Amino acid sequence: MAAASSCGSESNEANSKWLDAHYDPMANLYTFSSCIALADLHGDGEYKLVVGDLGMAGHTMKLKVYRGTGLASESTLLDLPSAVSTFLMDQNEPRTPAVAVASGPFVYVYKNLRPYFKFTLPPLDANPLEQDVWEQAKEDMIDPLTLKEMLEGIREKAEIPLSVRSVRFLAQDVPEMENFVNLHKGQPIKRQTVITCMSTLKKNMADEDAVSCLVIGTESADVLILDPEAFTILAKMTLPSVPAFLDVMGQFDVEYRVTVACRDGSIYILRRESKRPKYCIKLSAQPVGLVRVHKNIVAGCSDETLQGYTQKGKKLWTVYLPAPLMTMSLLDQKSRGFQAVMVGLANQVVHMYRDKNLVDVIRTQDVVTSICFGRYGREDNTLIMTTKGGGLIIKILKRTAVFEEKDTSLGPPVAQSIRLSVPKKTRLYVDQTLRERENAVAMHRVFQMDLYRLRLMAARAYVKALESSLAPVTSTLQEPLKMNAVVQGIGPTFKLTLHIQNTSAGRPSINLLVSFLYDQSLYAMKRAFFKAPMLIPGLNYPIETFVECLSDKGISDVIKVFVLREGQSIPLLTAHINMPVSEGLAAA
Image (cartoon, rainbow, N blue to C red; front, side):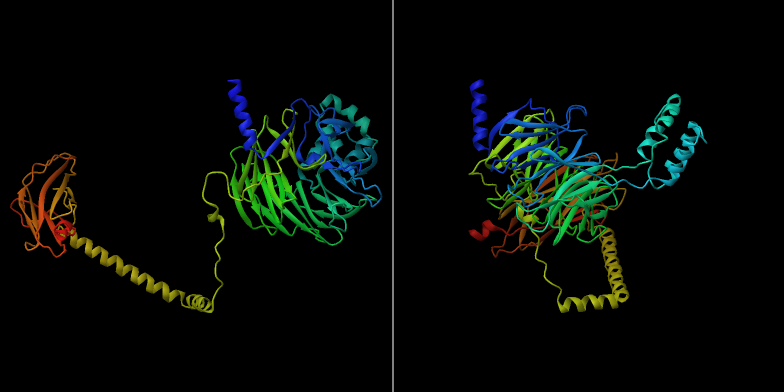
């Protein structure tokens, strides 16, 4: 058994496009894709892994740096990190990037892995009504219970939210309110926002080692762009909702585009010198991840879908995932110019998509919570993943690995997703549409008249068939019968089988006759007229007879079958049998 399992694992690794470089299930790394970055921190050409570790249950938050498979250094963080980015602040030599850690309302900047600068988000305007209420409490004009009632009224009606102090006061028990007021009433009211996401934007050049600005999304639904040296706010843009994911392209001094996925289930696209979003994309559910592949936007949603859009918001495709989406990231293989989206799922599988096509599947030992692809150490194509249990997985893409453009999963062919080249509108088409627009009422009347005439002709033909019993189903309730015929053989002798059925509820049919009408110069029948047996309701009665074709000219005709009641000349039902050409006689 052990030998068989080892052979199976070796064969899977041989068929895989990845080499298993390292797996440490006890690495104690709890993080997300936004808190992982790869950078050459010391300018020696060896890239390190920078991780903002969330710690266990909100404790022991640390900034960890990995070199190879071991931990190189770690620094304690005061609050939970929301994003980690690496960027070049200046043109000084050596060209070593700084590390920015977004945590609460602060951005901690590390240079050479040492604290360098702390940027604080500007405070927000406090609610004037809230300030007046606390001023009255400061002068002992109102008691704590009255303060609570007034703050609750402000929270329900005011547009500006309450400060953290007021929210904490409303959560206090009645005996503790007076102590809380005496402790905080002398301090000014402050309302501070926090950072929800962060990315980088090139300043004035598109080179890989160019100076970059920090782009920050805040809980107050603002997007800020910071100067890389002075850390002043260069641009501020407002969104309709709180940003959750950021993707930035372009240069700040030339032209840039900021794509933001927000908590209201929408994607907003901001451009240079625009205070408001230029485009808006409505997603089918809350966003779980956002990745830009070339010029297209790929969003992962909480309804287990992956959706692709153009830069202007036009939907391209939707992929339904087999499990809930946990995280997603971009795979950029620069040596081949190949880009794909890596999606970590809750069933311990990582899917790789090129557009809507599934090009690779990676099975992991645990649920993946963060993904990062890039240069690590001195290896260009390295995939780094952390798991839900705190594990660290490192894989290296084989140099011979080639991802196929076609979809590896079952489903319709790729050709179905290719757009048809719809021709342009011709002059004749425009003239026709103009004529239809001008004569719409007259054309509709002509159409309705033809439709009514067609319905009338069909009704008349149906009534005539019922009156003359030309249909294979009777129209009388006294003898509810149904008949169909089957012709077998290639000729010159055919076997003709009639299936007659009584469809009444409980009354049998008796004294019925079956008669055939045919061209006697073409066909001959041994029994052209005979009496049918008693028909029990619900049973199918097959009646067989033989027809012999007399002509050798390769022609055929119609044989009519009538079912009559004894003593009546009008048939109960009629069937027309289109006889086939006699192939046997023609061959002879």
